[in-house]
Length: 197
Length: 197
DNA sequence: CCGGATATACTACAGACGTAGACTAACCGA
DNA sequence: TCGGTTAGTCTACGTCTGTAGTATATCCGG
Image (cartoon, rainbow over all chains, first blue to last red; front, side, top):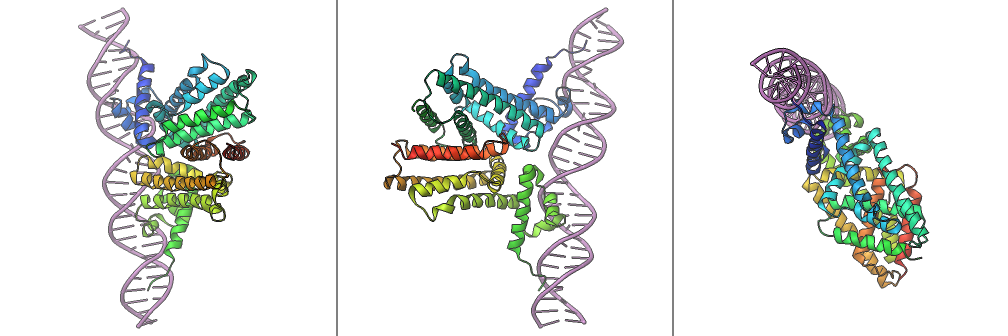
């Protein structure tokens, strides 16, 4: 038997490095040579862990989605209905550096998914799951008597998704200031609206 | 004197073609060879009209911004205050194919501006002007007694910008259906909120 | 301690890219 | 008609890309 190494751990490390390069300079800066060097390897060494660049990029995007899922679903375990919805919405917002960088990767994902049907389907699946959860918690919130607004559920879900996408974009390309405080204000105002008829 | 041609018109045509290629396949698909071919020229012919690819791309992005300005400022000439605000918000939304493609170019712009300070400054300038106009019309709307909401102006402006950015993104990478009807509903709900205390 | 499997390094290749430069064709004014 | 200016073509160069292939180093089980 030869040298024993943890392949999954290596893959995680390589995805780490790819993530960092995308955050710093976009997909354009994440070349195989650059990734290999930054990961401490020589040019062809990544081949054993990812058969192609597409596979590596897909793994990196999958991490972005699962990281978002973690943030989103974080408070869902301990709450239900309105409170679960609140936890999801705050969790999804780019309120700290980690989530902002995830938004940076997501942006590269958007760009690439417009030219890659498999990636696009992957994102639509993610969106569908996210929206499904939002719907479910809004329904429960109404059943609990907490959510009273006359605005239909579809529209509420869509409003959350749009605000979140917009916040991700603006935390990257918008003016340096603002953002965080205003993001909380938007969410507070939104939830005030929810609980009033 | 040699053959006389309209340089500005040629530049517009080249930007047209570049625009179309970006819409179809992103910045990655807009290579100098591809642009030249699609514009009906041979490889090096674009040199006379744009000194470099960066200059051509910048011109294309400038068209996206000015197109958005046109849509945004369209209703501003005939209205003031609340109605001007309404015209701006509807005009900025990706409600038809033309504005959706403008959003596609804008998305490429975002991506590139994260690696190009000059482009980023250009976009911040655009954002600042847009937000300034929004502020102005909200202020006038309040002075007219039309806008009564207690939500502060800063937050209203930011909410509009976030919803617009999010709508641009989702009209590209979101599910095929929804979008247009929901966009109008969002705006209607938003303006209902504006006129209530 | 040694044979074989594996990890990694290195080289090479074919293609695409932006752009520079030499060349040809077209046109207007005289 | 003719000369000079410019439009556009074509070729070439250097660089970078992903990836395939080959060689070397490293380690474990016997």
